[in-house]
Length: 111
Image 1 (cartoon, rainbow, N blue to C red):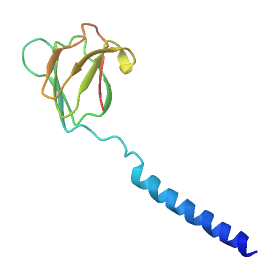
Image 2 (image 1 turned 180 degrees about the horizontal axis):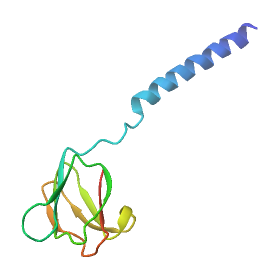
Image 3 (image 1 turned 180 degrees about the vertical axis):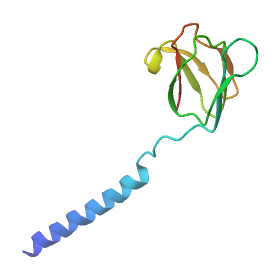
């Protein structure tokens, strides 16, 4: 009986330690990238739309977007398809600017 009790205590202690370690090393939920992603929708040179503190995949809702500017501290990835489910079209580093994919229905992703 004493051995079984010690085993139970050891099992409980190991479970508590494992749970504590998991809480320390578990990944945190996704954080938004501080800053903005800007879109020039009509080639006017003016920035028409922006997404503040973006996180995740965004689908283009406009027929035409000329340029995309990354004003966050993370890379922005553009895709020539909706829902960020094709090969990466372009990678925009922080502070960078690129031509948008030349197709309607493109998307971009920020981690």
